[in-house]
Image (cartoon, rainbow, N blue to C red; front, side, top):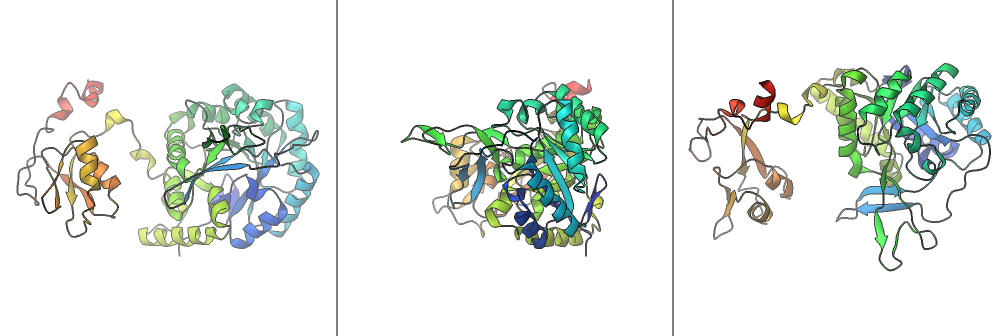
Length: 434
């Protein structure tokens, strides 16, 4: 059996599945249930400084985007950091850590951007026995208006400064949680590293309005006739998160900086993709809120089975293996040729591939009088649209071809029109090489 144990900046956990800082980690009851279900660690919901209490709305806090089958694709959240007393949270963290010493216990923090405020909260968190802290520099709503959260995460100089304060005043590993609401995520990551961060985690939620109530003419979720922007998360944000993770992993300035991957992790495959792009673990929120804590059982068993199949004994065996294959567009091989192929036996004759290609693409699919669909190789540019719109798995595939060889399906010679593309003046790769 594959070994799923993780060692992230010295913080050990029995598996790489942590619950992200969010409503599921707001109190002892939830976290104990999570650990009993099998989660490897948690990031306790963000704690604030002593002072005026945080007051959350007493109304809808979540908006949603659904697929056609009512499956939750994205969640919009306008909830603030914990509204429970600091001392109560600290006592509960200490109690849970004592009873589950083998699980990772990370505490998310957000206090005013003042050194004294950070110096005050770090010792009391350290006293709980927590394994590390996560600096919440990503929350896009509510707290940002108060000069915290994303208001800090969007200014690299602030990230570096606060990270350095924390590293100078605690023994605990410092993880910096990055906002995606920025043009170039590499800059805040570089700032975190300069400040001495042990790791970064990303992405935090994306600024969003998920829908508008057309009767009340107000954004949803609606509070007494008005709405606001919130943080977007769930499966819909995974592609954005993967790209940002990859940019940090392949950036020479942040090479080797440990990464905790967050954003739309719902299955073992999602987690494996993050790890392949260099993450040491993954954090989960929306999937747990949608399906409950026991979803971790499927995640762990699926990842273990896949690792056994691939011959990976530990997470380190495939961590970062995809990073060298992430490149800029100009370095793609423009001599590589593929053509679409339709499996007539699997085809249900729905015609979606034909409609999509004929109306919006390259007119490379033809339909016979009896609704048999075939590909016109001379028109096909292998854009993959037909594969993506086809409702049947593997009914349409892309077949790799070599210029000059005979296409086994049509017995025709594959065009060599791209054979000299590497030296063509319109090829950006050739231009860059020159």
